[in-house]
Length: 389
Image (cartoon, rainbow, N blue to C red):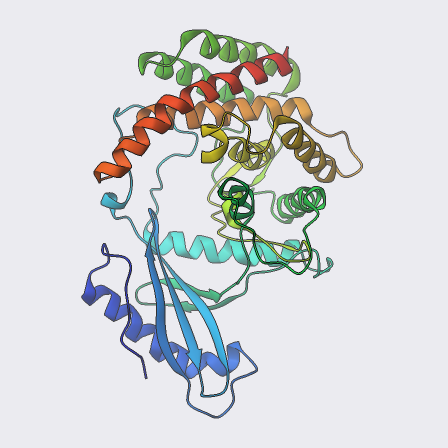
């Protein structure tokens, strides 16, 4: 039995959403007792709680009930609806991650493989330190993954909460330094779980890194970025890469989007990483840079020119991350700064190269972010150029 869904995602047609709800309901009625021990002989009913249309996926949240107990689950279905993504102003913007070419079904399968890889990576670790998002089932038509619902804030939500002055309800405060140490150890485990030899390689050689930065420099200048910081950063990366990176970079299966929005943080500091898409064998420093540069380029951090978090705090978190990732080895600080430069130029290109989303308010917000944000990107370029000299 399924209650009438309420939808918040106008981009999903009623017929398509109803088909998904019916397919999920059939699966859940037969499988709920296997997913959760609280369900017994009583018939389980399902209801759609929420439906979000995101740039690359539709996310359904369902409630399962048997009259006594309730458990929520998430159904994630990949899509390729172009209208849900911002269009490009230029057709030749260099992109660190190429546009996905695999089918939506294959992408969903890749994510399922990534969740299984995460489970292997943290197997035997302290469950109070590392959580695992359980993949409960595969929905065959349309292809999607049924997962547990996690009622915890993401790392991004915690950081942005400083800007909104909204306190997340917690019984005990989270040790932020410890969280970053856990993020470093988690990534070390994840990379060790799969060296990525069976995957296609992307930018795993030094000359490919330098070439991407040079192409990004040309694009940014053509798109109107301030020349000085762009030239200095690109030149510094080209010079330092010869001394810091070997010809063949240390590589493994990448998470695909190791960012603060894809990490749940529990009340006692446990982290649960999700949303993997290990499509490529990449340089291991890419995941490290994507997480750290993503924090420095959070919207409120950009708009306040670093006053949200502060450079000292970000530096301390990065040090914790690198120490934990290195284990008994030398923390790869220069390597991180080089790859942060790559991530910065990639995101900079996106800032100046993407058209605003539809809607007047969003277009105005995008123009303001672009104008104000350009100064912060220039500051970050100067910071990295100085660190790498």
